Image 1: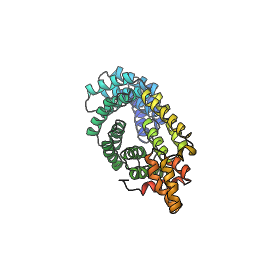
Image 2: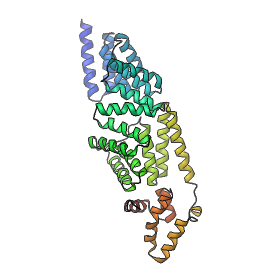
Image 3: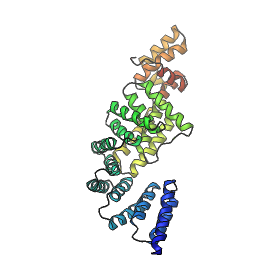
Length: 339
């Protein structure tokens, strides 16, 4: 009886520490609770969740295994084990766990998240889209809208992606990754002004410490890398794409891993595009001729949207025209959308 009282005390303290964000302290107290009572179902489950949050996924899975042993019909334990398995790339097992959780409790949102994540990591984007669509209909949170938005963007459904990413930012204005993904969606729809506005807002929030990208989100790093490329920051773009590729590899997300690697190679190849070759293009020569007839700086600014249309990056244009990156970005933002 005394052991059960001690177990309850440690478990209660673990709960308090968990809710205060001290996950390691919570883990230690849940461990003490289990030592006092080896059948403490709640402490096994709670310790597993805390371990997942500290990225100790293997030990978290062991805790969820023990929870399921003690309570074979516990939907939450299956769902959380599925999420942890997805995080280490065991995607088929993750899908099976989350499917079992949904059978036991169709309203448990985390099960759809785990199944959706595992589908995404294994390249089943349609399955991921279906799961995240269900989550957004069940739970109106910034993360649910963001996850749906990135899946829509990955499938080229840019208008719908922008809609859901805007909803995510309405709920959480500091969700940096949503700005980067929405900005890229705008860019691909031809709205460069909207794109650069989103990129710059995300950069501002990061600069003032208002938020940061989740360290396990390969899509967010890819989106920021793509944004940096479009802003002309080649080195930052490559660094983010390398991070995206590493996270994707950990998740066994081989398709996305290769996508990030291929994009890095493309950026590195672009760096080899010499100015002498660029100066042979008709657009550059027209800008040079206009520069002789009017103010040279004005002619350079007028050439910016034309060079963008050729597929050049902001950085390439700044080098070719001998302008600052900020001047090129300003010229893009001032360009009418119908040009």
